[in-house]
Length: 340
Ligand SMILES: [Zn+2]
Image (cartoon, rainbow, N blue to C red; front, side, top):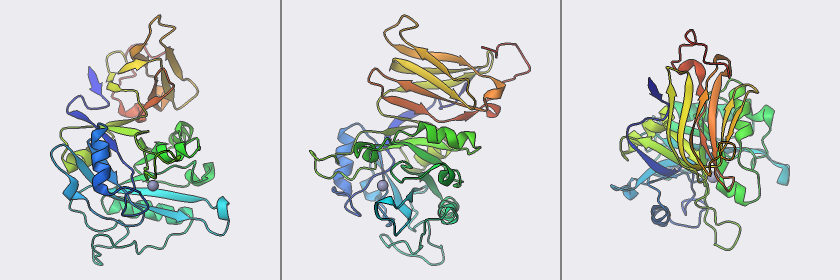
């Protein structure tokens, strides 16, 4: 039986889940961002300006969805260029949400008010930010750990976020190695259950400088429709994958033979990363093909989790979320098919 890990129903919508406009330090107005992204094949942009939670429902129409969000930071101070920070994006799960995630329902502030929550660079504060976001109905993401100079003990001390940025275009363009599969695996191996997203974090400062930071990393969301709550529902379910180019069409478990199966386009290499050391890499060259269009990979009870990365001929990647083997519905008591 086929059990789909990314729903077989609905449509894939291309999304940028982290962006900055003139509401904070971005160069473009929200409307201009909408126009630019629509022209480049996107259906969804999350507006996540710094500190100020501003709604953009007026930009939503039948072919475009504006998600309402905000980015808040916990910054270290006093160390100049060595200051570390932790940046978190909060995307409202409901379009009628008007209140900043740190604000109490009884202490209402209107659109555009600054966050009243004083942050400091401690794990306790970051975990409080995440908790408030989740409790108040937001999809909470942990952003660009490399740019933030965060290290293993720091990011392992955070918990409860829905997703982390496996790729951030703006940071990558600035020269940081902001493709973070290792940090994602650190977290998963440390027992954290979270999804991964690829975003632009665009500020769109003038082209020709190193800040033309749109259209690098995106998230493909599978949803029954482009309606606000359908899309945020798909985010909560993990019905999406992240990419810098390659396309994933289908991802499913075959419960009969205990395999995970992927269908994709023009892949040169497909890698299955697992909880332990037993990775699996499949190369087009080895199969005698110019490109791979899919793979079938056996699942072992001991894998704990697995996730798949598709590489194209330029080395660009598409990453699935991590899936936990015990939730896959495979009956490991049956056949002996699980040893490679
Ligand atoms: Zn940002």
